[in-house]
Amino acid sequence: MEFDQLLEERYSVRKFSNQKVEKEKIDKILETARIAPTAVNYQPQRILVVEDPDNLAKLKECTRYHFHAPLAMILCYDKTVSWKDMHNRECGEVDVSIVATYMMLKLFDLGLGSTYVGSFDYKELIKQFNIPENYVPVMILPIGYPREDCVPGPMHDKRKPINAIVSYEEYTQGGIIMELLIKQLEELISPNEWFVTNLSNASALLMDAIDDLSWVGFYMMRAGELVLGPFQGKVACTHIKVGKGACGVCVQGDQTILIEDVTTFPGYIACDAEAKSEIVVPLHDEEGKVIAVLDVDSNSLGRFGDKEQELFEALGKVLEKSLWSEKADV
Image 1 (spheres, rainbow, N blue to C red):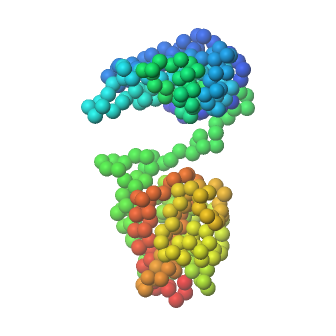
Image 2: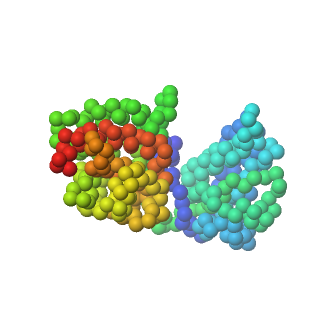
Image 3: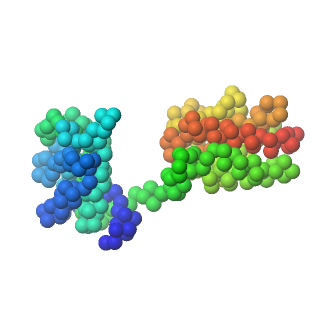
């Protein structure tokens, strides 16, 4: 298999057949682990191969994520061997992660599957497998032939755009410097345009420019309640009462509402069942009265934090100006 194809097609396997993994293939995986790079080439990786049924049963006592694989490898590092940098920071876990990546690519190339398991009972694992005191367990790799009904998970192909993960010269907000996004919004909004036109373009800009958003839009105050305005995303709730849900609470308290996990927010209104986190920013008229809200959702937990709040509040100040000329109609 070509290397680029291997990188693209490899996926986490969580369903395994009962077929035994041949020793020849096990040896090839372990040789790949042996030659993998480590800090200063100190090679602290220590690997325990587990394939005996009794020992696989022990492994099930240590983690629920064994997936009934016919083979597993426990990856540790020897803390007496691993390199420490000038600040005495331990590099063993990084080394093991590099080794595991090499192993997972090799075994996929051999027609096998695996997945990274970092959730296990640390003390129980040490006890069950008599792991030496100077060895630090990092992960477990269940390994085997993928079952016939095994397919990549639903998130496998959902990769972020390159500008969401790469910055040049300095780290930026989602690949776009805040000041640049504000400038783009200022240039996009025209005081001579109908506010619906401005907000429609604004929602499209934010949805396109900021990564990992599922919904961006506005709710406008009309007749004492919030009414759906321009947006980007799935169909949404059309009317929200003041004090209800994140948007209604935002209006009632005249403050930004930041929710890392929507299931923890009392009275949360689930317009989209897939939404996991949300931020709502109040928009004001010239007299400081809340006349609309900017509502932003994500399908990822904890997507919004202090930096995102600063960003959306700054954008809100720009958006408010587009509403002032329409105050009587809002």
